[in-house]
Length: 392
Image 1 (cartoon, rainbow, N blue to C red):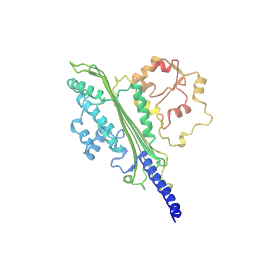
Image 2: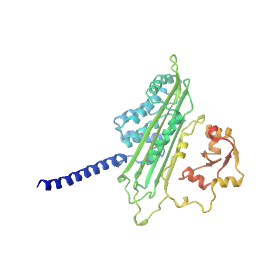
Image 3: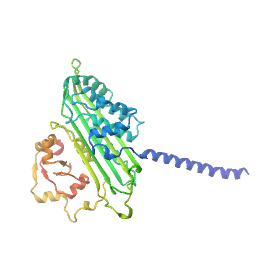
Image 4: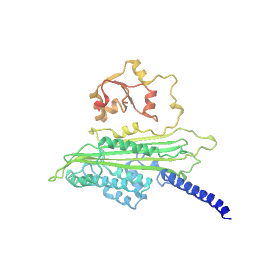
């Protein structure tokens, strides 16, 4: 009898162990993927698809608790370019949003939208410089609490974070929205430098405006991240004037399962909506962080019939080498593109400069192609006669 009892106990232990393993695996996988949820504010009512004022009002009318109560204070309705105290408060608030592990990804998205809507940009009013003296104290304290990293490390972190957010889209979802926001504020000896602020968003829905689908029933998977960096090289004790910069970003991926048309009615693969808002001042002379991010990160690419490459089209390098008609660009000219938004928009709105090729591609719009896809399907615009690494 004892032997028989032992025969049944061992399989029982195995079954329990297998069940425990399955449960643990389900929990683990569930933690790795964003949970599907019905959201009260759809992407079409957020920046950059609507104005900052509209997005801020929509969110603050809905959310009033916790960090939303801080971000939605009326004092942030209008923040001037020289209002150092409020700017520092907003960056500190973004750091709290970044560090709060209890926030849902959707709340993190909404909070970052509210703060970015308040940060000054080229269209903000010019306020008195007397308030900027407050920046020195708060800015120095914030910097001392941050992990110092180089600008190159920070750019690598931004690229990694955006790629991670984009890669979070669960398999099976066929529609998505990507929202990218970057803002930079800097001072030299207490004097404000030109602002860099850009927002970019893209929506793809293979079955847009489906009369058989209820927008309120859509379950979205949301992945959102906020990051920031602060530097301060000098703080003068007597005047509290600072030299340094604060830069922050917000990346979001929202995806869902778009419902097919009934009886094959309606057009498919046409539901694209893209928007870019450039709030940078004309005098800004620094890197275009957002453009670099979009060119560096691989985003979802629907296979549209119009994207099929022409048969027999030669490689871009071969095209450029064969024509011999490309304008040659010098290192000085290339640098002038990078530092002058007006000149860049006129000569080369979107730039691809691969390190392993001696050509430069320019385009008004890359559409839904990655940088590599675009270069494969289009001839280059310029030939360069300088070492790109040395020029940068």
